[in-house]
Length: 361
Image 1 (cartoon, rainbow, N blue to C red):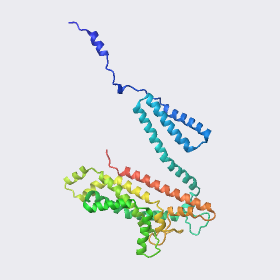
Image 2: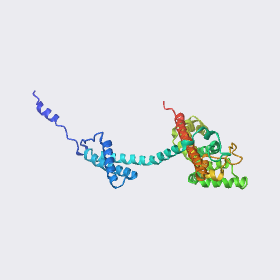
Image 3: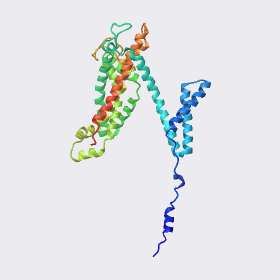
Image 4: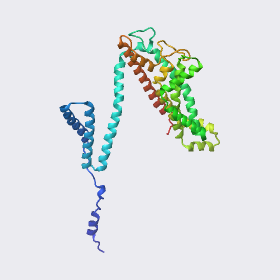
């Protein structure tokens, strides 16, 4: 029996054509993006040089012209889908750079101005009896750590217990009322917290009461809602299957919370608490009205005024003496030290989150 293989080969070689919407598109070369950006910068810079150069106008003009040009070129070569992707990438990158510019500017300014007094004397001496050059912020550093420490001791237990109640037990009007008041406290201006502390200790101690613990109370008012919200979100993401497995073994609810729920979410809770401390440690307004300013070292938060880094920096910059330069240098260095403390706390939060994260292997 003879088989005609020519027709079979002929039919097998004819592959169906791809749909028109799925046609293979070209691709821009790898140098198109950096080369196009460089060329756009040169053209825009040259045009602005003729009419008057401006850094801001140069950046905006370069971004706009480059985004439009890249979209057109990509649309012609790669198709609409890839062109839109490249356009969105450029927009997101520009938004990121726009957000980073103020941060970089602040860091460069504070480091450049504050490095002049970043010496040993600044960290081991106070301003008691110092007029003009010399002195340091040892008393302000101690005051900041003591006041923030007391605020953390008050805020962390209250915030964690409130979050546990809202997630594990809260039902009905009481839970809704607590949630409402936490939301209200989140938006309280810091100066209102300071005035609350002043009014409270004026009622308890008497008029003119200025002490470090009053500043701790003011900071705790600002810190508690942050701790509640962060801990509440971390507790909510714990799978209910873990709770049900513990209940199936006959474990009481309180023990399930202590042994299962909290250990599972401890990394996020610790990170949120650390970030809450970093958020309040730089507050100036509540400490300004509740604690005041002191030039001497004071370790006792329940007796007399205490200096803090935010208030020390504010007064050194706002009301400098004669000559001005030493006061301004101390103000910038105090701001630099405060930024370093906040940065250390943020790094510590990341380390804590990594250390306490549940092991998957």
